[in-house]
Image (cartoon, rainbow, N blue to C red; front, side, top):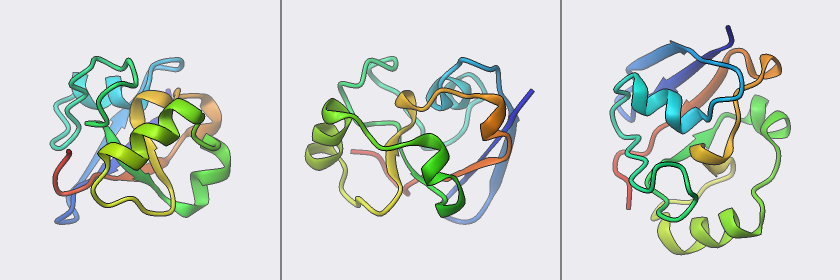
Length: 107
C-alpha cells in the first residue's frame, strides 16, 4: 500500500497507508488528519481539503483541472506553488511517499 505523509503547519507528520484509487482527501478524513475537512465529501465544490504538494511530487500528481483551478483561485487563502485540492488527487502506487503540507486553516 502506498504511504501518504500529511504535515501539519507545526511540523507534525501523519504518515498514512493509503488505498490505491482513494483520494488523498478521503484517506486523510478516514484517518483523522487535522486540517483536512473535506466538507463537500470530495465533490470539488468547497476547497476545504487544500494542500501544498511538495515539489518532488508536483509532476506526479499533475496540474489542477479547470474546476479545481477556479476553486483554488476563489476559496484558498494562501495559494502557493503545488496548491491542490486533495480530493482531486487519486492515490496510486507511483505516489508512494507523497508528502503534502496542510495549511494552518482551511477557507
